[in-house]
Image (cartoon, one colour):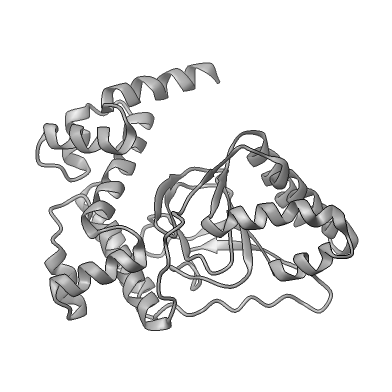
Length: 308
């Protein structure tokens, strides 16, 4: 990440965090049982947010950082996630000032309680309850489930009424039967979900994302929010699921994985580019996070591309 991109990211975050995030109120029309929409990026709801509704989220194009509960990951075009009610989430793509990504996301939101009630009359829906239970921690799908799920979500935008409802049930059926998914957030993640807490957490996460490639200090966040180091550390751990140091490490290693898999940049250069001062520290943290060395990860990524 060069200085120009870092500065642009910081300006974007200043605009994004000018207004505190609020509880997202999801409202469907009187003629629909769920909400389907096509979202540009960025817009006012692209923040660390939560809502009681279950959300199925497709990133149609662009890449970036996926934040789901205490999970920090990288997303690419076609990323398909299911997020349960009450689980904070955000998908961040770095853009230049004034840049807009039209229709980056397809978002489907629905009331899980409505499905639970319907299952009493329609026993075929009982299988969906298992999906809803797993989704409490967030799910990222892959393989055929992701491909077919994305296809159904795209088709929904061209339909309405019973035809759209039929596709909704097909989507739930496809995802409920699939074992091609990763569980994202930990079972123990339980943040405070009041407006002020969400505001501070969102600003802290945004600051970390813009600055992880330099020697960012926790004291900078303490000064920003008027907290002692002990108080901020405790607050950040409770509401993000990670210590601040672990959060920075995950962001750095995630960016390193992207560069290792998608470029020919030498590993030594990647080490410095993502914020490490020496190669041994980078290699140690990479192995702890991914269970292999950066060189092994690059060879594996190249082999996977070769099999496509």
